[in-house]
Amino acid sequence: MDDSVFRNEVQAFLTESLTPEMKQAGELMTSVFADFDVAMDWHKVLYHKGWIAPDWPQEYGGTGWTLNQRYIFQEECKLANAPAVFALGLQMLGPMLIHYGTQEQKDFYLPRILSGEDSWCQGYSEPGAGSDLASLITAAVRDGNDYIINGSKIWTSYAQHSNKIFCLVRTSKEGRPQAGISFILVDMDSTGLSVEPIVGLDGTVEQCQVFFDDVRVPAVNLVGVENQGWDVAKYLLEFERGGHNYAIDHKKQMAKINRQANSQYSSGNTLWKDNKVFAAKFADVAVDALALEFTELRVKGAFEAGGNAGALSSLTKVMGTEIGQRFNELSLEMMGEHAFVQQLDALLPGCEVEPIGPSCGLTTMAEYINNRAATIYGGSAEIQRDIIAKRVLHL
Ligand SMILES: Cc1cc2nc3c(=O)[nH]c(=O)nc-3n(C[C@H](O)[C@H](O)[C@H](O)COP(=O)(O)OP(=O)(O)OC[C@H]3O[C@@H](n4cnc5c(N)ncnc54)[C@H](O)[C@@H]3O)c2cc1C
Image: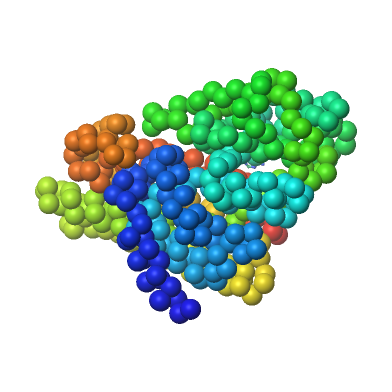
């Protein structure tokens, strides 16, 4: 199908299917996560349409779209303010299970990820293991047909909304640290598992700490081979780190700054039109964003030709997240004192609280704060630069 015909089809579907509340939830997003309940409503709409997992192979419920069509779909969803679906199951666990899962695991878990029956969170990081993930110590000890897990995971995004968690656990202390790690699937309602919310700087809860106190998990929940979970973990991380199209995020950010500029201009703030320093800063970021878009298209071209992104995905991660942060700073500058208003209740979709100042500035400060984390999660900017130094520059 011609790409423009496909784009029209997607636009028509979005116009017809996105409710005002869903669009509001998309507009009010202050991080990569949307309001959970509204995002689940949108998940179900996509599921019934058969469009919930464009990146999966068609035999497992994918759409069979080309890479270009998937890009167009993502772009149109974002620009139409569709709320982001909570995607750890769809984007990470599902593709990993398709590769490493047993037939039973695939038959059981994949349909539940597609339908939204299961929401998965990621239990990798620990208080003492982040960038140096292989130093993790949460232990799983074999006991008959079960493992018994003790320890803790931290920064677990949306654990409070999830009914399942995929975890890296230590099953051996012999040899290299990577050699004694296993990958296991755990029910969040298991006896001994508890969740403590972590309140973010913006006053909301997106991350949690998860505690395991003698949590008994059936051994059939292991993915791959005992003590060889590091390979499984790395394979899953390829889906976390690769394939994100930052250029689409940047287009949404630019459109928002434009709206903010117009709202500010009409109330006498001439920063946008008359301040050459601001204009030059904006142009500087916009040019970098355009260069990144072409790099991302180049990566997509490499995929289409059967190759892989290699170290280019580290480059796009660093550039994509840092450009996003520079747009956040411009947005903050644009909104001036309005950015300092904190109205948490006005950020809830469906809420009719009157915003203080222009409504397009409601999210500015929270977005700025939350997006500081983008250069930390999914592999910090320093780690990505190490990879570029070694693998691209051969230093
Ligand atoms: C918003 C958010 C959501 C997250 N969600 C999840 C989740 O759902 N599940 C999950 O498992 N984890 C999650 N994480 C955790 C995330 O993966 C870790 O924060 C990340 O891996 C960094 O680890 P750390 O926080 O322990 O920092 P550290 O690894 O202690 O790093 C501290 C600083 O030192 C630098 N540094 C470390 N090692 C090196 C090195 N070798 N060379 C140069 N610099 C280095 C880092 O870049 C960083 O600046 C989330 C984190 C955030 C902020």
